Image: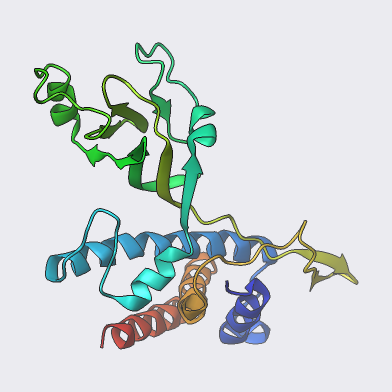
Length: 240
């Protein structure tokens, strides 16, 4: 977890509010959420690059220990009772298919009756439904497919998963505040403030990204370029 007030104060210090302009809490919260999701989505690009040079299974394991540590924060699982409450697609002929909820960012693994499902493309999934008894999925050889955010499972016929392992989306962040004497003062109460869910090692990159966005919003090229330059330097150091 990264403390949002720490990031905000560092961004203000870099922006030098007395001479270059002030970043309001509302603006900061917008930039902060954009920065968080951008960093989070980059994990999957980095994972893809890592899988090209190291062995990587469908469970998103990686030889990069830091990348794995960053992603483990967002690993979660929904049991059969939770999956049963997923929404049923309107007009679906398969009442056991389910719409993946909004908190599911990327499915990691699907399990049916304690057997891991083989994840198939839509074409492959549709073709196995027409296969004979020797190729049709069974309870020991279940298959799954995600099409249009709809999860389908076959195991001796349509089945409801017993569990879905996935990476969840980061929760929105917010620098909470109250106004006293015309100034916004930090309010850490849980109903107003929510910190970044990202790994603590991402604090510096969050500061640089938010600084870059702030510079663009204030039409200050010096701030935007400073943020971009610091961000690029940070990324180069991480790759060494």
